[in-house]
Image (cartoon, rainbow, N blue to C red):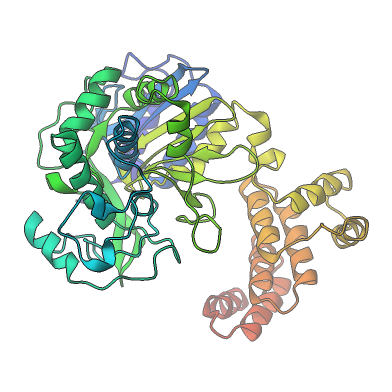
Length: 496
């Protein structure tokens, strides 16, 4: 089903954001975060979004925006239920740590200690390696994310015949087989199905009255539905130009991987309970839960530059400043816990393709000033030093400033990627002229890189410097003939 978003979102912003929403539970005023989210929802075509912010053990903001059902213009309310997809794994991590506190298992144990029907290559794998996606196991889903067979038994037997994908610990590769194995271990050691164990030991303990396991087959009161802009093309996820209804089916045995449906408010309550010792009795258990595993090279491994590590069911944002643990699910939901800052932010949406993990840090910046991108958060230490000097010089003499900093500090280094990221952050802030000077610095420092010329040309074109843009696009193509986009952009500008 295709959606007319220009009409639907116009209705949404008229009635749902400015304080005249049918959702009487929403705050009746618009704050800066509301305006920020309005902009994100417009740009990303997000039908509905829920947010909850926890600070110092209390929910300080909870609000819902947009349409839970576009077809019938049903507004999202704080009771609207959203699928959290792979964020479910965080609950599984807590379940296993509860069993460890009871002495029933240890996350460093080999899985063969608890299960007999495993191929020999799997027997030495530890529970922690399965959780962290560094096991090398073959995946129980195919490239289109369909299970290998129609039944639990057939899928299990099929995956056991497949070879290991890499030597354990060599790489990070997201894998669902490990979580199916973990589910079987929970079943055996708890004496009940893992879904009931999680319901009894987490949902009921916290008082999560709405939260449940389910999928598109179920009739769910206050369901926020599911939409997508994603498709798998040549084995990779790609964003399409249309929004469609989405359907997902999660068999019960697969629900350690995905399957919880909840609200931002109840997830926030669960985070509070987790940090207050209501779910895990020992502080050391929480530390282990959030400690990212290391690969054989001694480094963490994760999805990308932001979510760069993986712990016991919890992806991690491992960094020096404001580290976080951040479950993400279905390209639609995420929640970041910032342990050092005593703040947590939950963002649930009904759009696969919203990827809220990429803007949760920006929300945190409204509460922690030095986390604002405009204050340099997310930049490398060297780029931060450069930025500080550039501001005093109104971004003039960038090359000279960089040379001086390098001369005075042997640890000062400007990588091509770090400068490129800085330039695009400036563009996102609407600072095109400043970004232009950063991209020019990158060209001066990395004259043999096609990408530096490409970024510089793109910004020149945006500022109307057509002749210079063409020249740099041509240079980008000359350095990298595979960069056909640069060649096409040069031709396009020349024809105008």
